[in-house]
Image 1 (cartoon, rainbow, N blue to C red):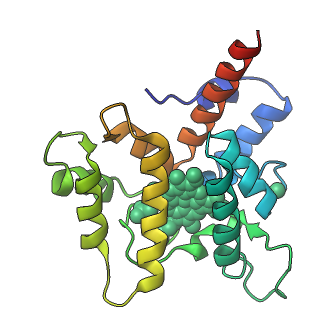
Image 2 (image 1 turned 45 degrees about the horizontal axis):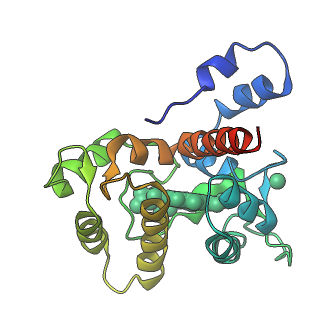
Length: 206
Ligand code: HEM
Ligand SMILES: [Ca+2]
């Protein structure tokens, strides 16, 4: 269902897109997840870029506003260590792993890399009804079990990340599929959704 055109982009020559892809290969997986929202590729994600990124993947106005406010307020300070706080609340993509919180799945390690064994564990532990997908209840069971005591910030962070993913990407049977979850980690899911939406829009106006 989810595909990435990274490898095609990579062979493209020296235009802007392929240059970005070449740069992107040096990024850790979590940096790629955040970099989708850096709409002008300057290394910073401003709240309006978070908003635009949410809208580009099909989120409604309210969710996009809430995402922009909540994410930029919580990650701007942590990803700009030692810098004077900015009222424009930028997030520094290169330091995004500093924005990691507790009570997560552990699929990103502390350096922002993808940990395959932790990813597999999501399904071996919580996918009871289908081998390669989570129901809404199974997702909740995972979130509860990932909770570290009194880590309320982490509880809220994880809840919002996973609920947003579920709301935007569940399939017609209310399942969150393995390939969807896999693709959110490196942000290729976001690129896929954006392309899908752009194509649907073009078709509607044709
Ligand atoms: C609709 C948009 C988004 C969705 C659906 C989404 C979803 C997710 C999911 C499912 C995780 C994995 C959590 C885990 O492994 O337990 C995650 C982690 C993370 N996301 Fe996003 N995300 C979105 C937007 C963003 C944006 C805009 C940023 C920052 C620019 C961001 C930064 C992070 C960070 C720092 C983590 C690591 C948290 C941790 O593992 O402790 N995300 N996100
Ligand atoms: Ca930017």
